[in-house]
Amino acid sequence: MVSVSWVDSSRAVTGACIRWFTTGERLRTVAARLGAVTGYETRGAMTQITTPPAFDAAAASTAYRNALDVIAAVEPDVASAMRQELTDQRESLKLIASENYASPAVLLAMGSWLSDKYAEGTIGHRFYAGCRNVDTVEQLAADHARALFGAPHAYVQPHSGIDANLVAFWAVLAQRVEAPALAAAGVRQVNDLSAEDWGQLRRAFGNQRMIGMSLDAGGHLTHGFRPNISGKMFDQMSYGTNPENGLLDYDEVRRLAREFRPLILMAGYSAYPRKINFATMREIADEVDATLIVDMAHFAGLVAGKVFTGDFDPVPYAHVTTTTTHKSLRGPRGGMVLCQPEFSDSVDRGCPLVLGGPLAHVMAAKAVALAEARQAAFAEYARAVADNAVALAEGLLRRGANLVTGGTENHIVLLDVTSFGLTGRQAESALVDSGIVTNRNSVPRDPNGAWYTSGIRLGTPALTSRGFGADDLDRVADLIVDVLTATEPAAARDGAASKARYELPDDVAKRTHAAANELLDAHPLYPGLDLS
Ligand SMILES: Cc1ncc(COP(=O)(O)O)c(C=O)c1O
Image 1 (cartoon, protein in one colour):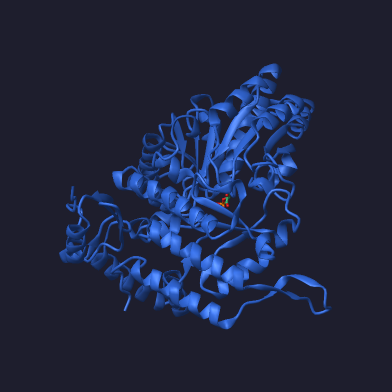
Image 2: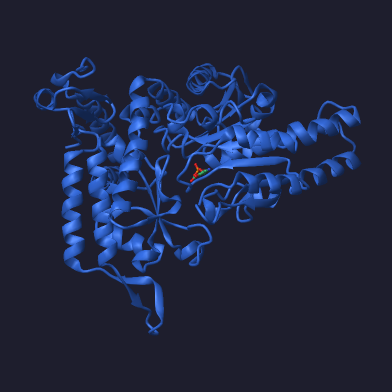
């Protein structure tokens, strides 16, 4: 079954699609003719084609060339930094799990006069006049989000994931702490409380509890940790993973919840390579009368693309679901809150409660990205992200590496680099020297702490957007193991063992760079986009 109707080769339009063909040879011919197809692989009689997201390369090239000229006329250094960023992104093998490449349509939607409008409040209920076009884009984004995730309510104003979590926390506090206090005092809003009642309510806000996943197990700073506002607001305790297998220990979560009786049970992660059973999390929350907030910032693309379904889809189970829009979801930088109807009014008060005025230009880009995510091609992309992570994990395991939890079920692979005799910091630096961009990360019960760490976090959303397939990820595993095997820890200046210094033979760095470039050339970023 060859489906190429989405490709207009005369205009160098590339299409986002993965299709299975019955004959590899025929495919090669079709692929060569299209010129737009950036990769294919053969598995027995079946061949997989992976192509990057669709866009009209000629139109995008004209748009960007003109935009850069307009910018350069005022501040040429900004225009040249923008050009250089595209070059840098094109030339790096990006395995940062939280990054992606948004489509030109998403990026272009951010560059408009919608940015100039103030629109505090919500759709149709603003503190400013003249907001009809902001209403339009915010409504579109919210409608797409509700349809995509099957959520009763969506709030698309948060400027980032941290902001989305803050909106969620205050929605829960409003609903479960403030509303009963207002009812008890017989008033409608906080301004009507006596000074004494207001003092009591403020103390009650500061007296609430939360549990969340520990940082070294893969949780996020915004889930109640002291360096973040969430840790200053809530009395927090964290749950970890099973020391035997590295998996989330639901019995431990239940035990902690029963003992600590939190107002909020927080689920979600930035560096845990497995699925979470949200049905079980909700059961635990209900048992202790906690509100379940799921932060799906990292894996929202896998939820949108229906890789995570049933008990692993957080949206039907969480009272409130928060996310970023720029990671696996492949939208603009930003955040979003989905919730059950009982929390929608409180969530909608996010601005001006904790958010500055909405960024209408970014909400427009969210609407475009969410429209893209509703297309069938996005589900195929999400499936490829997960398949590529498995290929990367298996490639690393086959070459003797140790992975936290022994594998992956999402877009993340967490490599424990202690078996190479390295810290995460040394491994991260040696890989960057070789043209492979990752980030160091703690592993559970990390002996090297949160700065040097013992792990490297790898993610597949960005490379999958470039059209990388399973064979390419296996090659990436090969390169990573090659570099880490060749890297030796070096002594500090005082002769003691250093957690940062290392030695990597030049020839290994050079040959890895060359191999990485070969992969990158085979899968160009924004193919056909020409700024010259
Ligand atoms: C789980 C999780 N929540 C929230 C955030 C914060 O997102 P942002 O950087 O957009 O504020 C991140 C970012 O890394 C994250 O991984």
